Image (cartoon, rainbow, N blue to C red; front, side, top):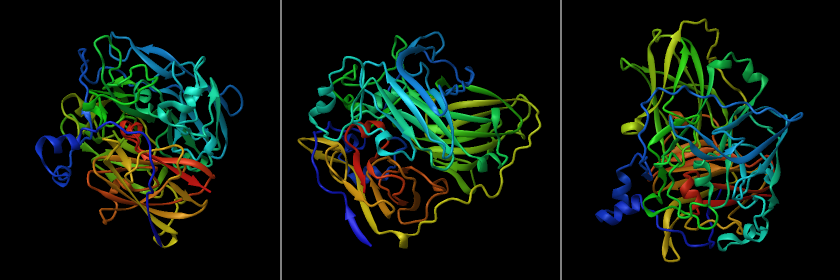
Length: 525
């Protein structure tokens, strides 16, 4: 097999990063000494300027389902709205259809849909269906902007010192077509605008998309009101109830980036689930299917389900980013990085009526240790099950199938007198081709990190082959589209570049890293 490294290119300078580099500068420690400490977070935490409510008081909201306007066609308006997230305070948001999270789209495998997005926000937007097997024209490339009314198109094409000759810019509306020729799973859609993805998601531009099929429906897994989507996201609040975010340009119109302490990532001190702070959900004494998404910009979680008497419940993983596992995997602790999804079943049948189960974050401290709670309200019949065989359609790629191995380092580095977040030593440039592969080729990629980097590939799912040269960890099972690189770690993945030809991306899904150049182009020919 041939060996590759990421090639050389140029782009704008990026601000310095803080985080591990700041620790190195302050203490004089070497990079290896800093990374050996394995910090549980990469980033800095904002502190809310308002009193925070006690946990487990607000009922868990369930995002509404979006109804089609006609057969397999949906419409979403992106607009400003306000919501009472913290009790008694109104919080301005940028939303899909006026809610945070946006409405959930449910679709069927192999049945294409079209979603028309209308931009009534004050800035350009882009929509990416994260995890979707989507033609390039609808994948949400960061320069394929939907402009608001009155926005000069020339600025859209030439902003921030760059020019992308392949950008497709539309005025106010755009049709995104999703073939959905993929395994049933939990996807999510979010803004992907060049340089401003992080603050746009922070302000509310995120929603869920569930793909289903008959084979999964027939398994007997918990369903209906015992299937709960859980979008976990941290935020911080200013004194007036608005969302606090350290943007250099609060209008998000011209100058990208965040203030220096937050260059490694922005963390909030309030944990939201489906847009509610530390919510509580009344449950039956039965099995529940939890469809968990980490929609945080930079915060990692290590989840556990604990009863009030200290007993930990099993988290039985049945699915990963790209759908069902072959067989269930049982965890007591489940790490989840930004943009990862886990499909788990929790059995509340052994919890007495009136008993409580808290979903906790072992990586948090203080208020960020709590996530949400379940209160068992009643005994109930339960005919659900977890079959020993969940799926038989997972790919079986082997190393010997690969036409090559590529290596990419996700690290900080110097450029143009400053520091940036780089892939292969280079910052993102939309006009440059970084990786070219042929449709149908199988490749092994070796990904190397300095600090935490959740790496996401567009279009394709992949399998984790190894971590640090050793077998994958239990939570690496199944087909993924985002893999969490821990500090100082090397991870190997294998994938087949199938589906569609065109220009796609791979990038770090720490959203601040992504905005500050940690993306690269993937051309499938």
